Image (tube, rainbow, N blue to C red):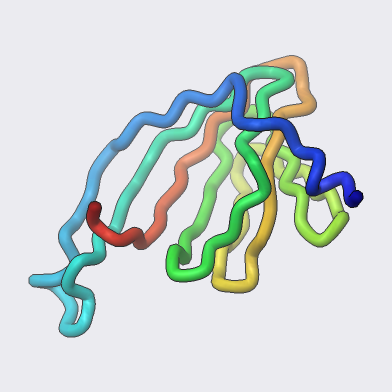
Length: 114
């Protein structure tokens, strides 16, 4: 069993919805989709899991504070303030905060309205 299959469930994570835009009236073919922006806070030792993918839910992340470790394909990459990463259809990952201070990110993605 790989390490990524042993990821604990989400803990120490707070998600605040900042805004949404209904994309149906904005872009032809986007009915039922929305652009969503969230503020995600991960406490020290927190995990944003389990392993998940972004098929049909592309997005980007930008780190405001702290360091977030992104686990993809068996590789752990640390991202600190002022940087981020894309989450495209090929992204399968999970996140954690290995640091001693709170990590804060802005997450923007396109999701199905539900």
